[in-house]
Length: 310
Image (cartoon, rainbow, N blue to C red; front, side):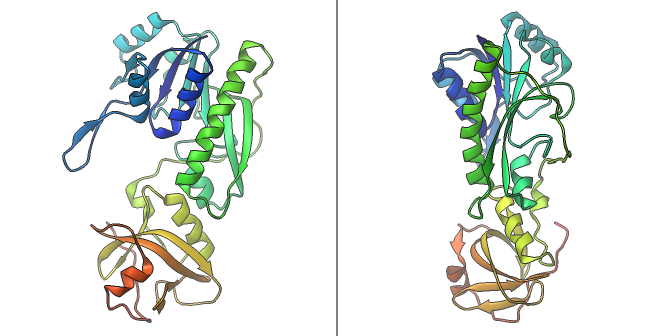
C-alpha cells in the first residue's frame, strides 16, 4: 500500500519504523521545516526527517501546508493512505480527501478524552490513572474523527510525560500496523466517538509556573506532567528554579514555606507536604536537593517567592 507519512518529533519515529519494517511502501515523508537550536542556532532536522533520510525516503517540509505547489506535488504522489503521527499542524480538507483510504491519525489518548496537542501531559497533570492510543479516521474537526482501534495503558506514579510518551509511542506503532492490516482486509469498521469530551491545549513555557497553594498531590502530578518540557518552575530569592522530581509527604505546612532544609528539602502546600528530590537552578545542571542545599544558606521557615509575572 502506498503511504505518505506525516510526522515530526521523536514520538512519531516508532510508527514510521514499524511501517517500514512491516513492508508497507512509504513513498514520502512530510515533516516540519528544520529548526535552529542551541546557542549556535544550528539548523536541525526533525527526528522523523533524520530517519527518512537514513532510509532514503523522499522528504517534504513545506512552510505552508496549504501552498498550492506542495498540494499539487502531494496529489501527484497519489497516496492510498496518509498516516499522521504528531505532525504539528492541522491538515486542510484538500489533503484529507486525497488518499483512497483516508487519513489515519495516531493520537495519544483514549478519544474523545484529551483532544488536542498535549494529551500526554494533561492526562498526568489531571491525575488520570489510565490513558492510551487511538487510531482514527481524520475529518475536518480537532481529533473528532471516527475511531478505528484503541489500546489502554496505566499511568503509574513513577511516570512523567517523558516516560509515558515513550511507552505510548511504542503502543501507537503497534496499533498502527494492526489498523493498516484491518483496513486492508476490511476487518475494521470506523465507530463514531462517544462519551464525555475533554481537551488538551498546547503548552507554553509560562504554563510551567508552580502554584504552591495547590495540594501536594496536584503539585506532584503537575511536576510529572510538565517534565521534560516546559518543566515546572518557581522562584527562590528571585532565582528561577526548575522543579524536576518531587514526592508527596504526610503532614502540614504553609504554602511556599520551607519546612525542612537539612537532608531533604520539604515545602508546604495548600494541603500536605512536598519533598523536592531533584531541581535545576537557572544556568546549572539538574541536581539532587541535598546538593542544592549544601551550596545555599537556606533555613527552615524561609519562603519561596510569591508567584510573579515572567
